[in-house]
Length: 378
View 1 (spheres, rainbow, N blue to C red):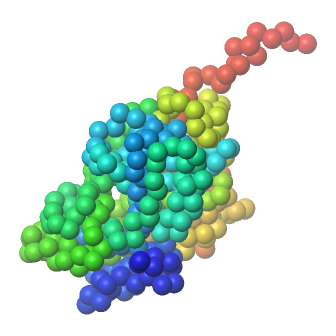
View 2 (view 1 turned 180 degrees about the vertical axis):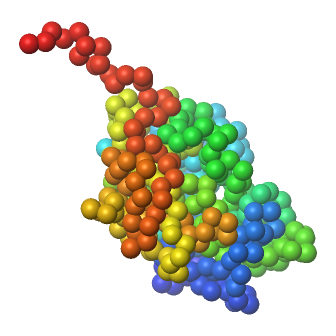
View 3 (view 1 turned 45 degrees about the horizontal axis):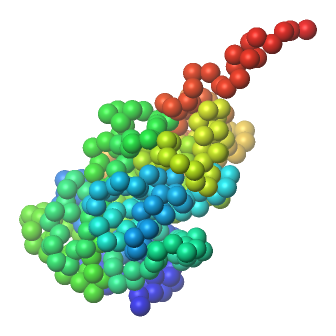
């Protein structure tokens, strides 16, 4: 069994020249390999592979698996064609995100990719919910994850690859809706990231196979480059943007993670209520940080409007083109034009979820508005 705990796991790819180990949710794999700018550019053109072998993989087998996962989650999986890439959220009773999972079914098993720290909580939750259904939940310790972008997954050898999950973000799925811009105007629309599962004992072989076929400028990239593309795409990550209060509306995660027309699931009432009434308590925002400072803020750093704390940084990275940028969750009421402050550094907002808190699926008027207009005065 491979130990993926934060303190114990160390990828064999960290022995590559120039590799600098990551920390936090990406501990155990390379943060960069000596040249993060060129690593990002190689990733953007499909000529880099990223070691994400610290991520966790769970499978669900059995004839009831698809209908069961549909019942439990925010996503409609029933009728999904094998090989389709999607994602689901498992919510608390009051709508908070408890698990966020990349999903693909191969016709026999449903593969779930999640953060390392969420593997055991996810397995335990699914096991508790099995009851008498014909499903089996397994943690796949001997399967590892590699990341690519721009179609680079096609350079990974078919053996030892298991399957490839293509990130649907930010393309609004069936039954989904948007808080941010329409798909065609979204900054993530041309960022095509993918996760390929490979047999863990052949992880190094898979990487060498990629380097041999992806062209003379092919290279291994670190999570710095991977996260730079994610932040550029405003893509929420469970291990970063999600805290104990996070609602999918606050992160614009109804695009790809929620089907508004499916049947009952835990948290559905809150999802519908926030859609109908608007105004999620917080909103995700991209911050463009003053580049004159050399230090980057850490996740959890306070964001203020000059008078009070209005939120916190969830992810921060130095992007090859955009410079220092961050994602942050701030109070919905913070005006869109306000320049914010992070650790004494000025931060300009780029709006992801608008302050009005209204989605494309929200009604033109809040429910009951007509009755209030008709009510006699005095």
